[in-house]
Length: 114
Image 1: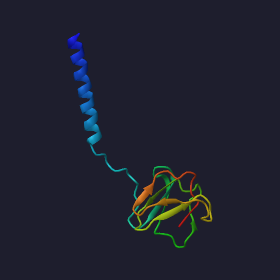
Image 2: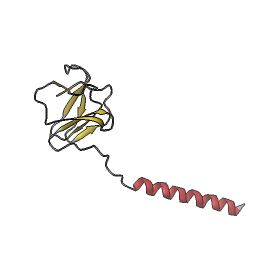
Image 3: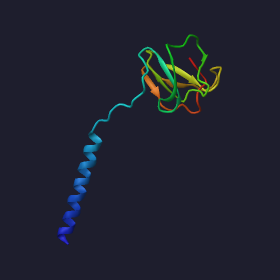
Image 4: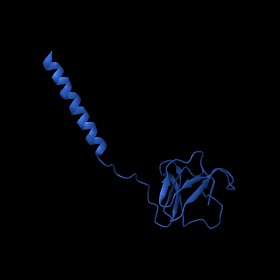
């Protein structure tokens, strides 16, 4: 009995040590695609997949996207925040994408931005 109990305790300690070391290991940053610095990249699929539209920044406070399927994810490599709206007129509740940040899933897909 004592041997089995010790074996179980050692097994639990080994499992706990492995879990602790896995949690302490840093992970690689998520790949955002090839969005250049100083641009905003809009994707038709979540997680930066599908057709991409690359814009140097908004030319007006509210502009429609050129993507017929809408914006499903966005990478913002501008030094200012970008807002994505689900309607064509920038009147819906926006999704805020911080400077040099991203939003991997825009649901429902956005139709305008500014």
